[in-house]
Image 1 (cartoon, rainbow, N blue to C red):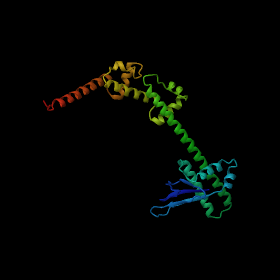
Image 2 (tube, helix red, strand yellow):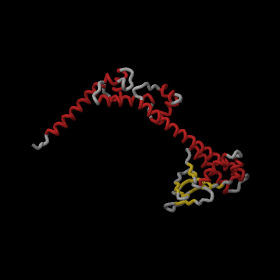
Image 3 (cartoon, rainbow, N blue to C red):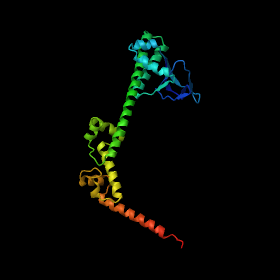
Image 4 (spheres, rainbow, N blue to C red):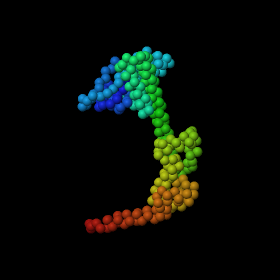
Length: 268
């Protein structure tokens, strides 16, 4: 197996017509028996560390076979893989790789022992970082789907009870978990999102000519005073004032349409 730790410079790699553009600290795993090519567009030098390791090393580091299975699966695809880890993993693996390179460049006491230890830490670090990233990616995908379902349910039930407890119970999660991932994905709390959507619906109804005292229940508000305060806070005007403004706009637009039509020369 072969790992290429990119350090600096302008370079990209190709494996089987697939291009990899590494950032400093990224690691490219090149599959066995598949040639890879490095390309420096301006022909300038670049720095990298290439690490070769064997199945025997993997087995000695991890007799359970998890490490070997992980790297063997990537190698079997013959496409290569570019690892781009979080900063804490990147810096730690890069530091260990630099130390490993220095051990191989100079004959130091117990150099082979230290090299084996550093190589072991690098392989374990890659395995941990990759499995953690995959787990986080799956969790993000699951959270995104959950939020899509929650938002769809809220939008379809604006006139019904939409308490945090009720929504959490419906989707079989704790209300604390729901609130946390909702704020992370949507940017506002569940309560604020519901209020904004209800007020948007109320505004549409007011604009179409419905009375403020008739629509608050159909928009999910339990009483008129709550609706009044929320509407004024969001739109900086009261529902009745907005109704009057909307009616004035409609009247003006209607007159403009009539005047435009009346000013035309009609054939007789």
